[in-house]
Image 1 (cartoon, rainbow, N blue to C red):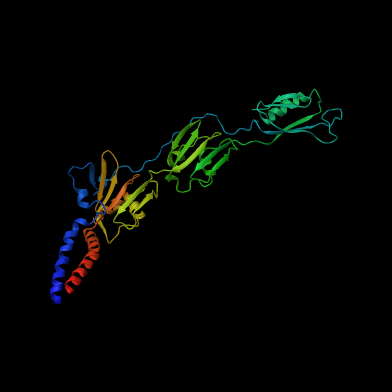
Image 2 (cartoon, one colour):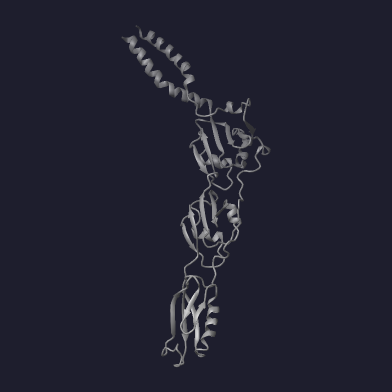
Length: 355
């Protein structure tokens, strides 16, 4: 068989293979023409051509369920259970039972018991819980006078078991926070823990108090501070609704946490490092949004007037940005899938005829 005849037979076979294989090419996602078809749609299609086509709101914030006070202020200077007290009496009279040859008479340290009663030598029991140090000092001084009118009494606290609140979850330094002053707020509590591990708008904040949970988003937590009580538990967790998905003919398909509290479509495309110039169809950029009904927003980025709208289009959590593929890119992909098979089959034909 002549070489020219072999080539004619082989070229005829090559011409038939693409036609037979077109139906076998896999789809990478919805086509632009399919999204635009309005037959029996279960979604509303909005072509964004002007500001009037933009949605009025994106992600909104302000959730704040303020907890009611249960225990009251977490800190008090008054004596409480398990405080450690020292009683000091100075008395120059050598006739006094408190005389110590130039030294002060010391009684303690005493850890305050649950009933708050401290038994003091020569005086008897004295109630100290929920009283100030100054108040206990005055009371004890009056009760010591019948024993020695030259005695000078002082009551001091050397230690106490701190009241605490706790912060757990995605913060830099989780753990207990001592409540060592009386005006500690929820913002102080979060700041003491070092704050969230990333931008604050990416998290939810849940306070457990008295067996109930009170929820906040970042803005509600920031704008509605409340007094912290002993035993409060603040949990910081990722807000899974503060993200969007970018896919299709782009450089980097990705699920993106909101880069700002109120991101735009430009932020979404930028997070995916832009469109893939070899594959994408800039006239077919879509945003799929869940709702009732679902909405599909479409953008033609070949139109210069649409570009400013991309910077103004507000994203919502769980939006899907999809960039359709250009027809030429689909053709190139088809050829790349068919070509290896075609070459192999053509070689087999040539070998058979050569034999």
